[in-house]
Image (tube, rainbow, N blue to C red; front, side, top):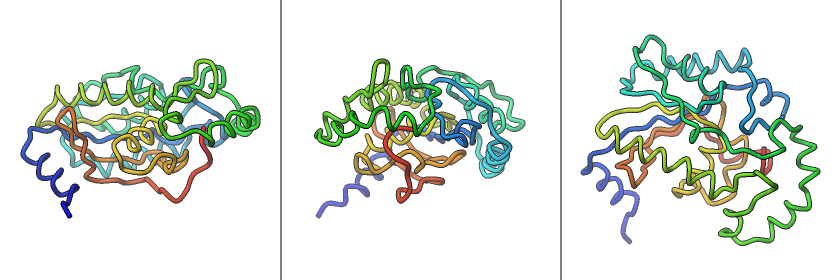
Length: 228
């Protein structure tokens, strides 16, 4: 049987590629309070700052040619900590933002789950293609919309930085959806909570294909539901 993973690795090694370190922001006040952040913001906690500093030390030997960040403050602050003394500008991009939950951004997570219970029951009856397109309310970004804007920017970055290394600081929802899209895990397995604050993944891309090299801070065995 053909070894698809090995074949893909050989293909990527023959191409001009960009190395991307994708980081989830540090822990925030709303993470602790179990509030839906979406595209609203809250400050990093003390643990969030310390976790970002620990990650900065793990990555201090990496030569980054550029740093990109979501324009939300929790991601920018994390990027600033990881940057250390590197003389690089942090380029902020709206496309790196977390999913918006529409009017539920900033909402209590438990209350939100109760209010959309009827939608969750309907969602569970859908096939995978329909789930990708499903919206939990006005303004809510479906998985399909979220991964489209996120992966489009990652491909643009990869093409612009072939044979270079780039740090990208973003959000848990983006990373879980991307990694489902590229086949790292089956749909629905990477629930909220599986990608830890200040966790990271190292991937390679030629601007089209993505190959996962290293994962730190992802636990497929945990998770807190569908939607936080």
